[in-house]
Length: 100
Image 1 (cartoon, one colour):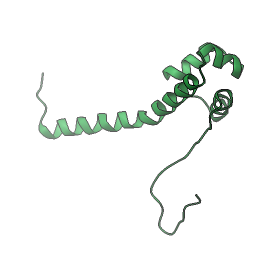
Image 2 (image 1 turned 180 degrees about the vertical axis):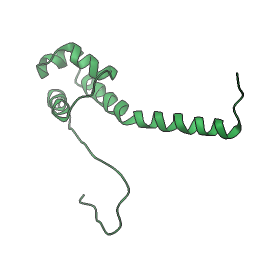
Image 3 (image 1 turned 60 degrees about the vertical axis):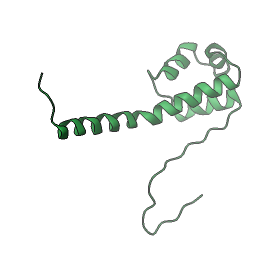
Image 4 (image 1 turned 120 degrees about the vertical axis):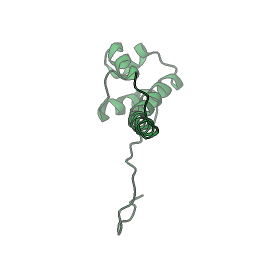
């Protein structure tokens, strides 16, 4: 097995750091959804019943096998008594102002 140079190790570490950072938004969304369900005291089955979807659909979203659309997230918020907040963050462009 070839030993990697210091530069190659740094490049590999940067690649994996970027890769894992790219997964964070989806992870945070799933964590929030599970948290909302648990705060409401619901099982996956109960949340699914209230949303009129299958329990397996909830399970697939929570484990990351599929991503929910905004409509589904609205249903989760409504069923759990939560508030849905979606925002995009990034650097301000020169000459623009924030709308918030």
